[in-house]
Image (cartoon, rainbow, N blue to C red; front, side):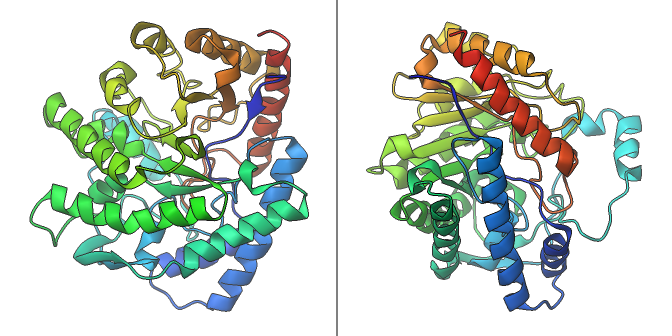
Length: 382
């Protein structure tokens, strides 16, 4: 190792015109597919260029060609229609004044609500790999234009667990049956990303956030049983794939809120660390989880894995000082015990769904620049 490498968790701000198209499509309004394709292609080329210019090492397409990190599957799978009734986060409900504050916050027409995604009203199956293959080819081409190899690129695909709990089940006899069907469908995207020579990132907020959402009023053991089942399904479909090319992103919800109902990392870590992934992306910058590097000292960090430490908070417009970033990286390296197995990243994405970006675009890019500079400074300390 000569220096600490940098990356981020996936989503980046989308151009307004593209966001409008995604939002209209999400609402079921007619759009011009050719215009969506053209604007997506241009946005991918631009967002890859900006990441490269900022100095990030591992890049992606910013998820700009998708409406959100998981509801886009409705366009690539059968079985989804109508609207789900998603329960609100428990930490928001318990503070009614804060919840009212959120409700008063202005949302324009260019947003995609993750609180009201489509529901599973029929059998879930993957339609065609054309869309994911085109998405991968687009990223590979954008990287090649900058003389960056595909091995430095990654594409995010949701965990089957977040789809199964966020997109209401109205078809399958049990949640487990629904989970298996979603896993089998998403496996097509997992394989397509790897076949394109890119790294696969699995976005799995379900492994933490659903404790205070879907499982908010249920026993902890019931939630942990769900985490184990999701982990089992991921390990089933990822068996035989190169572990070092799989990234797993776990978070507690990318929203500014109390978060005092978040499940502690120590409760889920025994299962999370056993998932077939060579890199684990974890929130370590926000005030609720910055201390959880202690879990690695107490329970250990898997020898085969890299920690992508979240050292940038994606829910605040504060721009972290590079020295703060560097200190966070050093703490993470000390907790893992090997600086060569640590990368610097963000707690989550900057626009996980169209219109939901608590950090304004110009600040988001400055925060990423602070990430790069902080990693440079940390490299001189570890």
